[in-house]
Image 1 (cartoon, one colour):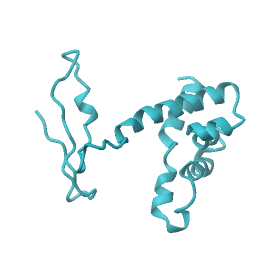
Image 2 (spheres, rainbow, N blue to C red):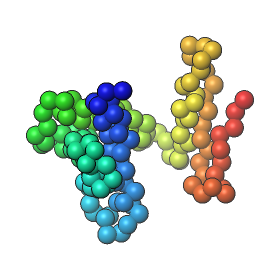
Image 3 (cartoon, helix red, strand yellow):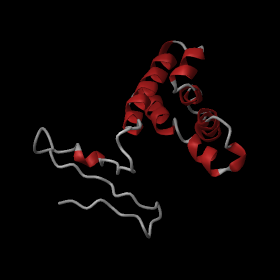
Image 4 (spheres, helix red, strand yellow):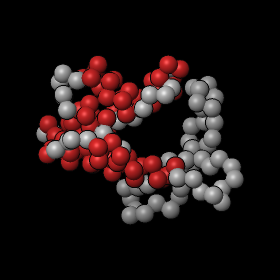
Length: 139
């Protein structure tokens, strides 16, 4: 694996890690999650991959446009930004939906025997506690 691939994978993994600090600590409530993600990366692995914190800091279009990232770092940040945009499309509100909808499991899209899996699997809406979590059940 190349250095660029490692940085890209780590950037994709940690780009939203700051949301845990933002939502879990009242004092961080008004801080941007990108800033908190960057801070986390600097604390944990910043010395090994110094450009990684800039990738997670600039993973939104508006931040990327204001940044002075160039070259490889700019390209990697653009990839993470685009992947984040594609992934967040599932959360766009549908005005026709009046109640919460369960998320479709990514395993609905994985099928090694046929080109298209027509059986969709949905994650039941439930509390996120181990004792009450409803695991997806399918054949």
